[in-house]
Amino acid sequence: MKKRKKLTLSRKRAIVGLLFISPWLIGFILFYLRSLIMTVKFGVSVATLQDGGVGYTLTYTGLSNFKELFTSHPTFKPVLTASMLDMVVDVPLIIFFSIFVALLLNKKFKGRTFVRAVFFLPVILNSEAIQQAIALSTQLIGGGIASSPDEIISATSTGVNIDYYIGLFRDLAIPDAVFDYIIEAVAQISSIITASGVQIIIFIAALQAVPSSLYEVSKIEGATGYETFWKVTFPMIMPLILTNIVYTVVDNFANSEVVQLSYNTIFTSKDYGLGSLMSLVSMVVVCLFLVIVCGLISKKTFYYN
Image 1 (tube, one colour):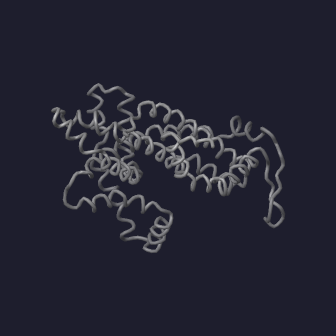
Image 2 (image 1 turned 90 degrees about the horizontal axis):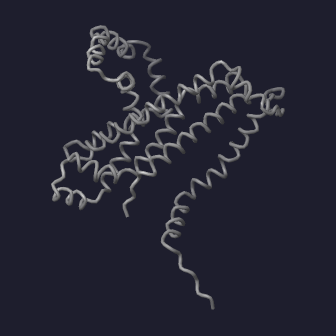
Image 3 (image 1 turned 90 degrees about the vertical axis):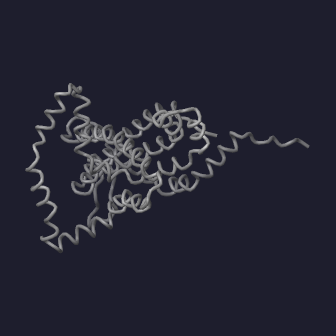
């Protein structure tokens, strides 16, 4: 009888990884793949609704939608470019802020659980059901408490001369590109905090998984806190940085203006072909962005066994 070949460790890990993603893979094949194929069909066709709005007919038009999208459409290219630029700005800020907050929340102090919940609260409040409830309550109130935030903003914004402080920082001879990036980051601080809830939780889990023996060794060797972070903590959480980058890019794209433009084109303008093509093109651009970023970062990623 022939002896069975034993599976190598790498193959065993590959099988475990395949089993781990199998629920997603099954869901993708059963639910998403058909929708993706239909989107491609709509993108190369013109959809005409039948009488009564029940059913539709597709007329193949080839690359006519592509030509219209990239030559004559007035807003798609600027909106797509702006969405990608916002992503380039927002993703590093969200990642750095999440790491910083996770390092603080990983320390032991009274009320740590409550503070962690506070940082995760925006994720819950951003859910569609909660937003609809808040919008409905605001409409029902129709004044009083609902109008107070605007009054507070208008009262406080008039008492600070922002241009004066911007001038002071410009006198420090900071390069214009760096200075503009800092200004944009400060302007988006509220959205950065709102978008960082899930990433903070993931980084806290990554920090707690770092073996304490590594910190003990670095302490014995006389490493400073700065050296310990860059030589121990940062390399150990690098795989989760890659995970958070993918999550942040996808989350940022899902809430971008280009997705809203595609939605409005389909459901408001009833141009199903052009709207489907917008979603396809933007998805391809984001996937290329992810491939490039993940390819560059994965070369520097350290995996602890």
